[in-house]
Amino acid sequence: HWNNNDGGADLDTSHCYMGQARYDQLVDLLPDAHTETAAIVGIDENTALIIEPGEGQCRVMGPGGVTIIRAGQTHHFAGGSTFPATMLGPFHLPAGDSGLPQPVWEETQSRRAAAYAKRQERPEPPAAVLALMEARAAARQEANWAEADSLRARIKEAGWQIMDTPDGPQAEPL
Image (cartoon, rainbow, N blue to C red):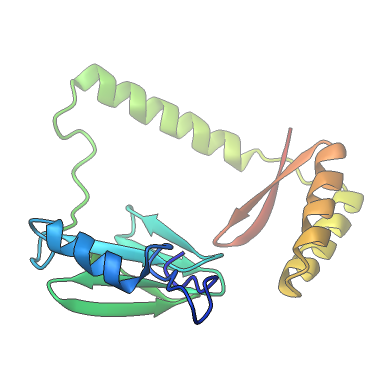
């Protein structure tokens, strides 16, 4: 709720309802607030920050944006944009087996392969469910969230679950 303005002209509710003045006081209490090692992330209302570690990328979803304050610099990313995970601080994806006992790593790889194989076997939803999915996508495009939620419930009643992914909605049997 970084961009909240419920308080109107009389009460500053920005910065997650605390207002600019109280936010500044809080930041001054943080030992590393103005260094490269600390990042403050502000996420606007009805907005999400998706961190994709495998890609080293972050994605902003929703009508608002994400504000990152690091080393005295402020960066704003609008909904739909992407940025490198290094904007949040030092980032590197460790090797998968780094520091793990070999049997644990092998079990992890085995389960990962099994999960991938299961996803590849995903059955195709029936035509009625596909039609509901299309109607839901249209409702979401029009920001008709009540209708989209109602359609999601109908899809669930038909025995399917919707997973919203970067590649679009996917249906999985329940």
